[in-house]
Length: 114
Length: 112
Image (cartoon, rainbow over all chains, first blue to last red; front, side):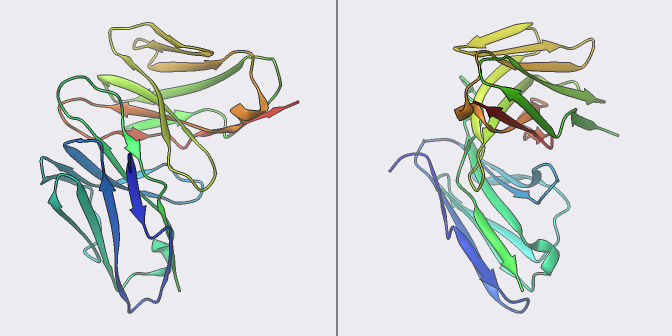
């Protein structure tokens, strides 16, 4: 399998639930990202991992917790979310340093908080 | 404050015409500017990038210009087709390992 794979594609969760989003890249990239996309808003950067270290954290509420166990996998752990957290969550990867070809995105996880 | 604006939320054109999309930014000095295509329910797909020292870049029917004095990029699709209908996103790369910042996008509809 190639590219960036996100699971699940759709998730409905209650405000008291705990769930995790998973992202896997098969491109040999050394940086991975979480973005949130809400209707009528630009993509909002949430977290950046470069060489498995978190290098950017964009004032995201603590109910979102990222984890990057290795350069191919990225998780977003969710707990006690709010209805306004409902959105499309996108994972991306890129190569930092060397020849640069932009970001490769996954298809996203459509999250609904009820 | 830093802003990226894609001037039109929606653009409707006829098949065969050239679509021109605009991206303006303020208070950035991007190392690269990139354009992505996004279809409904899917993640963005990388199309083209242009460096700060380049004026123009082409790829098949796509052309991007970058004017760092005007702080503006234009994205052109020539001989447009209904299959080009999608949302197009402009993104700035500030360099030094920082992540991309995106505009809201312009939704292009090409009618036959």
